[in-house]
Amino acid sequence: MKRVVVGLSGGVDSSVAAYLLKEQGYEVIGLFMKNWHDDSVTISNECPWLEDSNDALLVAEKLGIPFQTVDLSEQYKEKIVDYMFSEYEKGRTPNPDVLCNREIKFDVFMKIALSLGADYVATGHYCRKGIIEVDGKETYQLLAGVDGNKDQSYFLCQLSQEQLSKALFPIGELTKPQVREIAAKMDLVTAEKKDSQGLCFIGKVRLPEFLQQQLQPKEGLIYEVGADNPIYSVEKPEFDSLEEELAYESKNIDYKPEFGKVVGKHQGAHYFTIGQRKGLNVGGTKEPLFIVATDVKTNSIYTGQGGNHPGLFKKALLVKNPEIHWIREDLALKDGESMDIMARIRYRQPLQKAKLHKFKNGIYVVFDDPQSAITEGQFVSWHIEDELVGSGVIS
Image (cartoon, rainbow, N blue to C red; front, side, top):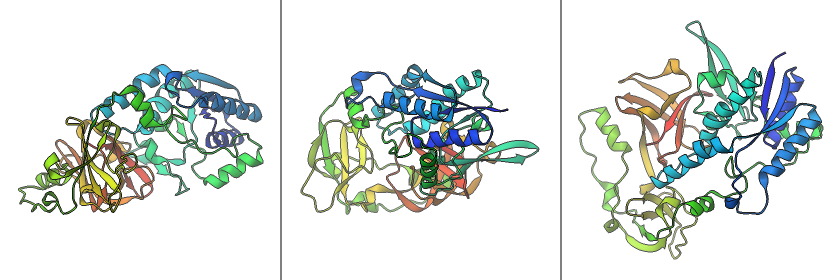
């Protein structure tokens, strides 16, 4: 009998995942990951992880499976929290959830599971795993979940063949309503529980406030740049090569204070991200202000009016070599090669038509339609039909 360790988070998805595996005849062990125990940063006095681990325990008891809690907060702090701070300080916007899956759930946690004699690790993600043969070798596919509304393959875009080989996604064939229905039928305490929001580690802590407690505030200026500013209508130069052209298309505009007018103050450029419009506290404009650029060196924020402001849009982005990741290593591009794909630059964004071009310094992702708020530090994933084949960090 194959043994599976399920990461029970205290939510409905992982509860139903455990139940389904048991139905399928696996020997199931439930493990709850405790990732955070620094109470000095919990903003509310609720203790989410205690409540969650309790729910996970009740589910395990109900299903009659062994259960234990593992404390991964040390590794968490080192691999996720420290990384987030360093990214924010550089003015990039990290994605802790993608990293948490790569570094914690399918690495540290997986090693613990395997040390317990497990054959597989299962999670409550809405995605599927496929197995195909490539050149006589078993190759694993990361496929979209059947529920188009909840497809979470994006969060797993950094997994390796090795990690996928040991992963199971029991609810990938189901929709959220079906999952809730099963939980209710089984009378699981998590059946009605709301989906968790916020970070995958601090539960009820909101990210900006959490960061603000750690990063020092420093006052700076907010500039508004008009949509009719000449920087947006610069003649495109002639290029000697496709690579030069793509480098031009993916480059950020270098904003300067003289491009705009001062419309307010902020408490630190590193708290803000491109495309953001809440939290600026600047009134009196006809349309809401969106952030088109932040500059942590000069501690300035540049904004524009309305969601169609030209400063928000770009056609191409670059993923540098060390940050390119192919799940399907057999499909990896060599220098000079290109490939038609579908891509997304954030979770839940509908897939966009695009093309990959591989050069010496990395991969350019070139979209058919200009994309709004391409954000440094976030992940871009690329897909062929319903398979996520690779991803990388936007540079």
